[in-house]
Length: 254
Picture (cartoon, rainbow, N blue to C red):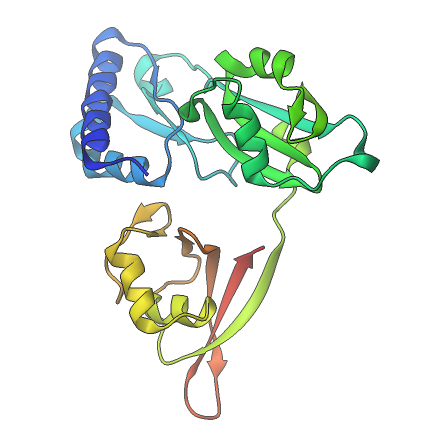
């Protein structure tokens, strides 16, 4: 996670990109930003609103996203986000190891690739779908040959064809209220005090934005990311238990 100085430098860079887009009538782009970096953008959002902006990660399922300054109706033309989708898969699937997100990311980083040039990585069985800047796509295709001890091939892919909706499980929770700390505590089976600490340490995001308000009442459709635990969507109240508690529904990403 970036430290405070890194985030301040990022905010300065965002201000510069917005100004450049507006003054030169061109689109400007960031690299891929994680949730904490996106939060740094939201903190100065009003200061850059004059330039117009959008955010994209390559798929609606992506958390890591690029900010583009400039809008078609302001600039008079369109320019795509510089994002490419790649598929990495073993050359001999039958003999391949079970590979994790960390394995694929590590193999990419070992090629000297900067983290901010790589977006989300979705692992499916022994293969992975990776989003990256188009400036490094050809390099990865040509040079990524091994993940751990498994020989792999890397090819360009179509995100819509590659990514299916992630597996989700609907869970019913018996809680006293729809307070976010209560739901997190129950869902991840941790003490309420531990749940509160997650907010204090900046690990909880609602709809992509950092929230430090542990008493926030979840609304139907809210997407929650808890760093170190996972993601879920709040479905809403499904009814009441015999003891008068709320039966809250959530969809959990597995």
